[in-house]
Amino acid sequence: MAQSILEAFEKTGALLNGHFVLSSGLHSRQYFQCALVLQHTDIATEICCDLASKLAEVECDAVISPAMGGIIVGQEVGRMLGKRHIFAEKQDGKLVLRRGFKVAPGERFIVAEDVVTRGTKVQETIDIVKNFGGKVVAVGCLVDRSGDQSPDFGCRFVSLAKLHVETFEPDKLPPDLAAIPVDRPGSK
Image 1: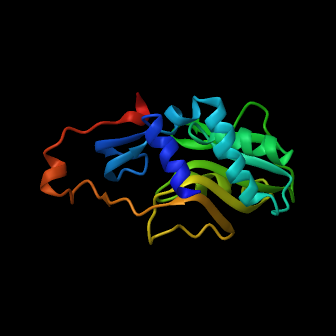
Image 2 (image 1 turned 90 degrees about the vertical axis):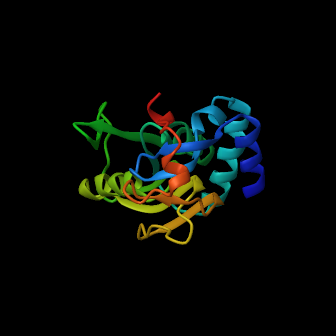
Image 3 (image 1 turned 60 degrees about the horizontal axis):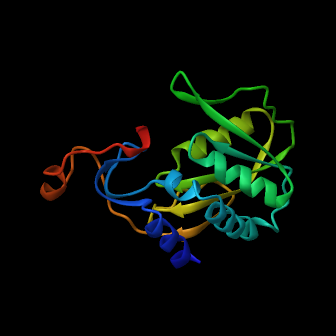
């Protein structure tokens, strides 16, 4: 399964190489531009179906995603699990629920995301659910690029591909990476 998702990323030009700043603030030589793979609805359906199958036995009431990257993943996973899907989005620099979305006390959620490096947006989403009295029972993502430093979300965490992709703090760049101009594809 990990190989097939990587093939989909390569086939669609969604696996980029260069010098990138990730949403976590870390720098990397690789970037997974999920929008490029998810724009192909047949591929999006296939890979999200694979993720939903890994989450099918999790008892949940709904799916929630952090915007922007997780929205398509969450929508597809929710559809395949027969659950409603909501998303959190940025407002004043932090994720919040808007658009009339609600979390009921005791409601059980799966958080669906595209790529996890440090898991900051996933954790913010988990905190939103908890603050409304809900519970996150699982986290699922297409690509877990955290390597051997997987975040502990306090629940089941599954991915279609678990990779060790080197990341660097901004002040600790290797010379070869520092010599390459920075690209910020997530903000284009």
